[in-house]
Image (cartoon, rainbow, N blue to C red; front, side, top):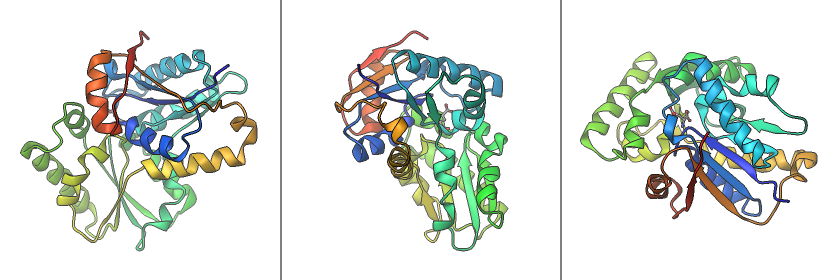
Length: 269
Ligand code: DGL
């Protein structure tokens, strides 16, 4: 019986991570679930994000996934810990994207000043500061929430003049906290779609970090270190896409994020 690896996001953003995971580990079976009907998560309360994420994770367990990656920073920040503590059936694992990003941040920053751009939910949770300082207490973390960026991406406004103005303002506000920040983490899986504009609006000496490759690398490493989890993941190289909204919309928009055509099915949660 197939035991796919589950990949979850509130919408399309997780596809930027999944794209890299599938490139790095093409042998496994995958199920991607986007909760597009209830996206964005980033502006919602802790209780709501936990409830929504738990629903989707349960659905992926029903599909026989024994390992699930929350390819969403907001869900990783607000729901992962509670799910790990209260909602994991025997032998099932759920992992997030914050730890893989934070545990090696010292390889990127030279002066120990790191900026985090993320949703309001992720910033308010303070998860990035807490996680980074757990590994590297000397690193200073500056955070700024960008509530308009996910709506820009979800509505495919990724090259517009309006997007440029909004992005410039948010980056200026982050740098106003410390102008010598040398590394900025795009701590939302939607943001890589805005990368060309983000680069345009950021001083050239600042390194901009996206999560896809990093998470894929860390997952490969995790599977090597955990043969008891790896042996439960089936290997036929198949992928299924599910969305809680209209499948035709998902198929049209997903291509921008995934850089490949996809076939999707609607899922009622
Ligand atoms: N892609 C999600 C993240 O990484 C956020 C999108 C949302 O607000 O739903 O945080």
